[in-house]
Image 1 (cartoon, rainbow, N blue to C red):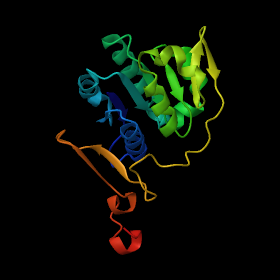
Image 2 (image 1 turned 30 degrees about the vertical axis):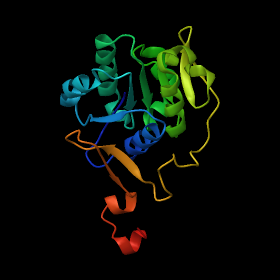
Image 3 (image 1 turned 90 degrees about the vertical axis):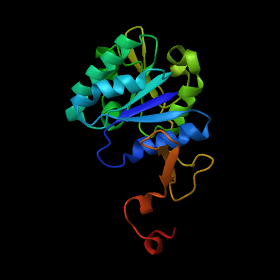
Length: 193
């Protein structure tokens, strides 16, 4: 089970794309909203039973909140990988890994393929994360940046060119999803759906 954590005041398409890619690869993703510091306890509860946790650090202004959450996640399950991604993490990957030991890996830029590859490593994730592209990892206390994976160019199986996404329903009863254009109120005629 992969828990994706990030701001979700509105539909967080980054997390939805990641969840769709993970689901298409046979993983069981779940999304936990982290809109403010007060959401930390709910995230910690949601993380129980997760094999890895991904943090969507998209805003620099909230970096300290996410780092505090990463510390709490590591205290609860020291062996569970905590992966950071998002705009801020991509731009500050070396600094984050060199100064924050509760983060194990930083996914750089487009993360759909990279996160699936990391999740596929299972228990070997931390030891083998640096073997593939699209990440910065920690080796001997120093950040090591691997080559860039490149821009995400293919939709996972089951997704179409209209960027179909999937996420767990709020009550946990299954999945809901839809074309992006429709999800933002664009009608059938305008979106072509």
